[in-house]
Image (cartoon, rainbow, N blue to C red):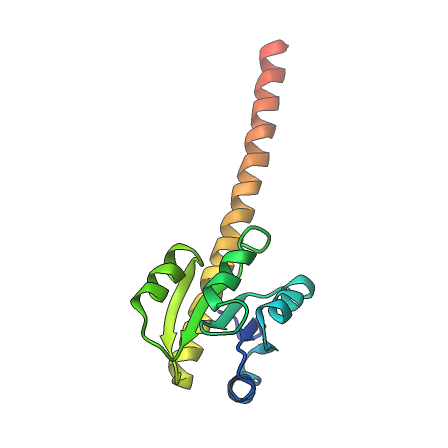
Length: 155
């Protein structure tokens, strides 16, 4: 990862002190966006290119998994991390199956561990983006080759 790459991270948690702690711990390393609810988180995603989404599981109105699942159709690219203070195997299973979660991390988080997971998530984001771009270039090249082949066959 290049040192000048700016990683946009959205952290969604209904507990303001967790948001403040996250921002204080990571604002020098990443471009940090925070939201106190899934609705607020969606507003951020609509206006910013978010690479990594971290969300708390237990929130009022909408759980973290429900939030992640709800954004997949429109915003499939951000890599998702579920952060929770509760060890709930059903939440883990739902996170993986429904929310397409990359990592499940328990609170309280260890700064170094979370930093490494965010950086690894960003690497996956960039690899997927590069893969899509290369696939698009390959499709264009194939179309051009087919066109040239047809021209040669007709002449």
